Amino acid sequence: MGATLASNKRRRFDSPQQEAFLNLWRTYDRMRVLEEQLFERYELTPQQYNALRLLKAAHPNPIPTLSIASRLISRAPDITRLLDKLHGRKLIERMRPADNRRTVMINITPAGVQLLDQLAIDVRDCHARQLGHLTPSQMRTLIDLLQKARAPHEPEGSDWG
Image (cartoon, helix red, strand yellow):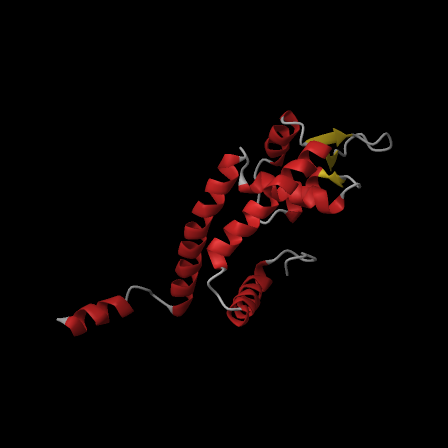
């Protein structure tokens, strides 16, 4: 009977690719819970946090809305709504350049920078809970393998490629 259980466990996946994909998905799901608990305390979503980080990295220069959307870690189907919420909290400001009124430029406000500074230690602690059990060598291997797995699916010119 023990051999049958072991045999059934090996056949749960149709292919090694499926097993790897489902493991990635389950890992993301487990780690996402910790992240969501953290950001809920600050009334942010992970995508809003990501947008603020991108804006802070570019500060004091503003970034076009579409550029923010293309740089987010995960796609934001409604970047306008995401930015509306940050704008409503006065964490970002919007500007339309006089020479191109169709473009909306986004900049982080001092309140947005302050919020990110306030979050910094909690975010580091969250990442330590998520992945701190891996050795530096395991972490490097994981990063390299994830980059290789993702590379053929990244858009041309992506910073993540």
